[in-house]
Structure formats: structure tokens, C-alpha cells
Length: 411
Image (cartoon, rainbow, N blue to C red; front, side, top):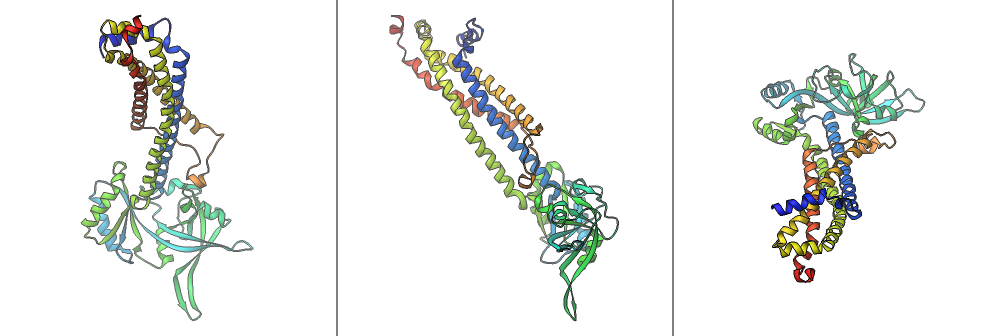
């Protein structure tokens, strides 16, 4: 931009007439601020939801799972081999062996017996750094499974069975039935509820029953056998879980089945990213609509300054110099408006996350409050896309400058 363009831009903002405070300019600024603020609020809330949902899912789930090929369970030799291998992997934070099986949960303490299907999850609750956030998800009671018959129940499962901490619960496992003269007799045991589990994930809160690892092995009749190994990775390695699972499968000689959290939840987060950018594209049309005011403002300014433009062209100013003046004015005002819109949008989003007037249902959305997150990349994308839209809009009426006839203006 040459000195002539810079001079007129300074004059535009420092002139006593305050041209940038005219009604059409203020209307243009407000339109850009409101549209960009709306776009920023939507993106920040969507990204906040995505971030917290991912944190919740990766909290109750491990990052990598190792199973035995076929229908067999892992034995002690497998566990020793896997544990030795994991100790040499710098990406691994912790690991744990667990037992998972299906069962029926029954409340016999009522006049009418209540029955619900559940998943028994045998864990080593005393681990200092477990792969999942079991201890942090205990909403009532205690997480310690000290006695053999102590269990922790998903709070939704407890609610459906009308059970509280301190009550007793009967578990029946048809998979561990015994043959008797009277036919098959399912395995049945009574347990004592010491705590309630609340992760925020409906599927887990309504199905999980946590037992001590040894008690789960005894109940399932699989001594010294385990369903799988769970592995927790470092934070900066979580996104590489799929690659690590593929790599380790080969290093184990395809002896084990190794899956990552991406295998089970990757489609969900891919869909969220797609929805986020579709939402961004749709809401960008608000900025496009606001840019119509830019076209109107620039066109009005060109018409009102026909005499000045004619005189400048008579003194040798080219069409390019005159166009730079108007484009520069539009971009400077737009940059200020877009930045103010982004800041306003973030403030509105933060306010929505703090307020208590409007709450979302955790049953449907996994979370019971609005969460906000807005990173630098999203900030730059909104800024650049908005500036491109405004630049394109401000370039449309500049054709009038090339059509101005000096002789007609001076006459």
C-alpha cells in the first residue's frame, strides 16, 4: 500500500467528521459483530462439548485393550508376557487385568422382585494409577472393595432396582451354571453394596457392577484367568492409540487381539468433527449476509466522493490506488468488528457455561452443563474466513471507480 493510500486511510479515521461513525458504518459494524459472535458462541460450545465428552469417554474406558485370540481368556503366563512388554513401552502409563462377564442383578428385598441385566467388572481397585477413573466416579458410598462380597453398583442400575448403599443384591450368572439331577443350576450369590458409580455415561451407569478381581474370578469360576488387559497411554499418545495397537499386534506375532478406543468410539468423534464444520459453514452465511452492508456502505461512499475521486484521477491517481483506499477502510473496520465479535462471543459462551437458568439433560447429552472451549486454530479460522468474506464483498462495488469519467465529474 503506497503513501497516498495510507494518507487517506489516516484521514478517514482522524477526520473531525468521524465518517466511520455514520449510521451505515455503525450498522455494518454491528452486523459483523453479531454474526461473528454467533459463530464464535456456537463453535466454542460445540468444541467444549466435544472436549469434555472425549475426556469422559476416555476416563471410563481405557486407551488400548488386549484380548486372547479366539474364545480363551488370558492366563497368568499371558499376563506376565504382556506386562513385561508394556514395561518397555515409553507410551504406556499403566495397565491392569480385568474380568468382564454378563449376569442378572436381582433385588429380593421388595414384595415384588426386580430383575435387570448387568455387566460384572472384576477390577483391582487398590491400584495407585488405574487405567480408568473408577475411584473418581464414585458418587455415593465407598470405592473400596475390602470384603469379598462388597460391590459397587452403577447408580442408574441401583435406581432401577430400588437399591441404596448398604443394601444387599443377588447376582445370578447363567453362563456358570452347574449340572444337577434337577437340571442346570445357575451360579447365584448375594453381595453387599458399598458404593454407587456415576460416570456420566448412561450405558455404564445402568449396567456396571464392580467386584474385587479375586471375587469376580471365583464368581465366574475362572481362577487365574482374565478377560483382557487394559492400558492407559500418555496424554500426547492417545491419538496414536490406533497405530500403537496395530504395531503391538505385529510385535506379539498376532498372538493377541489388540484394539484401541478409536475402534469403539472413533466414528462418534469423526461425526462430531463433521457436524462442527458443517455448523461452521452454515453459520458463516450469517457473516455473508452481514457483508451485504459492506457492499452498501462502500457503494454509498464511492457515490458521495465522486468529486474527490475525479480530482485524484485528474492528478494521476490510478484506479488501483483508489481501490486500495476503499478496501483498506473496509478491512480495517472489519478486522476491528470481527475481533470484537469473537471476544463478545467468547464472553457470551462463558456466561452460558456459568449460568444456572438453563441446564441440559445429562441423560441425553452425557453432560449436565454447558462447557466451553475455543482454541487458537478455531480463532484464526473464524478471523480469516470472515475477512475473506468481507474482502470479497467490499471488492464488488469497486468497479464503479473504473467507470468514473474525469471530464464529467470536473464539468
